[in-house]
Length: 110
Length: 118
Image 1 (cartoon, each protein chain N blue to C red):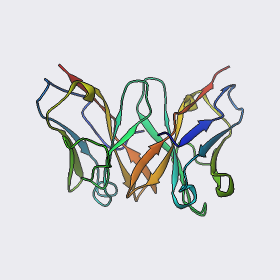
Image 2 (cartoon, rainbow over the protein chains, first blue to last red; image 1 turned 180 degrees about the vertical axis):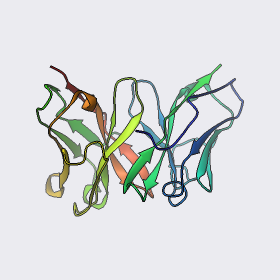
Image 3 (spheres, rainbow over the protein chains, first blue to last red; image 1 turned 135 degrees about the vertical axis):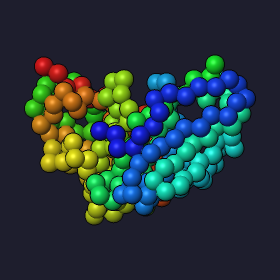
């Protein structure tokens, strides 16, 4: 089951800023860095943000990540139609001795 | 370009076994940790298992512990997942992914489907 809690959906019009939250606990987000993944319909996930706020090469600058305490956030500034996808947060959990993923957030561009 | 290719998925009956493979065409296979992540139809992502670069350290999700076994053959740039005692709840697309908690899973295979049904 998913250990990290995300809102099931988020939406915005083109150009708007959308923020997705990811809530965990001290054994996971509170003690490890957070990564974010984007999954387009019918495709494999893609790494969007690693180490809380780092962007891999090729990921647009409108995607940014942050972490505070036992929560993390992904922000999409200047929303575009191609950003319509499912987004997942992930991190390591020291208590479970394994990775944990968020419940996923479906982003819709209105 | 896609470097990881997952294979071995099939339709099997409850209680049967299956072995998945993940082959890497890149040049950094032996230096990277690898994971299996699955996605049941219409559901979210679920981490299944991970293995260190040298194969010495393995981790499993509670839902598969004791039934699944992860391994790797660095000489063949291939990772395996042995699935035993399969149940309907194991029906999913299984993705292999390269990376660890610090780098994130930065490379993903295309996924291989496993269906457990009588």
